[in-house]
Image (cartoon, rainbow, N blue to C red; front, side, top):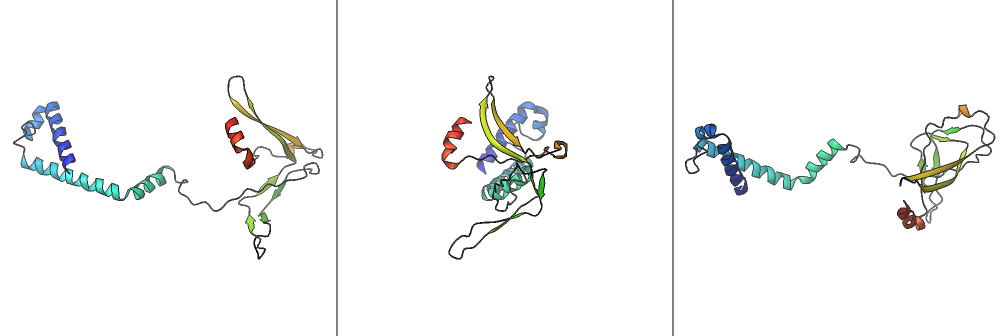
Length: 186
């Protein structure tokens, strides 16, 4: 509480210098002869600020959680366990895009009981008659990095206007052994 009282006294001096007529009405211009009501007001304010500081120190996780939930509500939202599954199609034999609804994948048998886990897709999956045989990182003359994707199209597709490629979700991964090389290259 003492630092708060000291701060209020110093702020009172600054106020007295900036507004001498108003400070005289509150006896702020005479350090030894302050108005007792103003002095009680200062003490009460210092006490409340001390309590607030104590509360902040004790409840900081609750305070930060409240602020984070206001600023970034998605950050504190729980996310279920996720996994990425690579689906490989024979794009050479596909004539059009195919949508898999309520898709499920079974894991390989695990453990002594040979338990298989069931993974359910969180959204419909659209398979396109495309393959991605090459991904490369290149540098432009102006210093920008560019990731180049080379797609192969299925030869049996008759009408490409019927295939919606406006949304093409990609997951780019690197084998674990090559992470340090890729990270320094990016």
